[in-house]
Image (cartoon, one colour):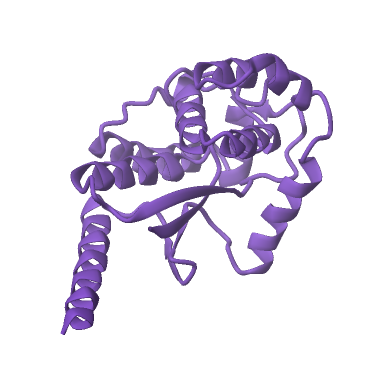
Amino acid sequence: MIKLDILSDPICPWCYIGKRQLDRALESRPDHPFTVEWHPFQLNPDMPAEGIDRRTYLETKFGGKDKAAEVYGAIDTQARAVGLEIDWGAIQRTPNTLDAHRLIHWAGIEGRQTAAASRLFRAYFEEYRDIGAHDVLADIADGIGMDASVVLRLLGSDADREAIAARDGHSREAGVSSVPTFIVAERQAVVGAQPSELWQKVIDEIAQAEKTAADSADE
């Protein structure tokens, strides 16, 4: 198996679009060699713990209502192209995602990391839930087979907060400045929401290289 590390944030629309495109490629190549691991990267590490009103956040980030609408118009076009129909106006708050990343980490311990990431994306972009809220995170945990009461207790503590923040900081120090960022085999970085065709090509090239190596070993 080949490691595919994914740095993302569950409130990042490009991350959700990129995941959808990767998922399609993996589904089309059921014998793909990838084992996936998710890593924390907060778009807004200085976000207040309670989050902020999303409209205020976007207009501040992009320099006004018109610019924010322009940016998200382009994002919406790409989202719809991969089958994601998102009511952007229904997303009321931009949360601090440190706790969401803690949930992804704990889910990884139980072998449910991709399930957690998937549900967090869906909860935020399709169900319009506040994924910074502990009760929402505990409900998501319950939905993927984790013990919600344990998760709720952990969320109420400082468990792994410093570790998650440190991992985020380490990625920035290593040069990661945007997400999604995919790292193939701990060597090759692929930045941005890449089309399914690119991932299919990567998978096919890996399979061909492995076949060539095996044939050479048999000679």
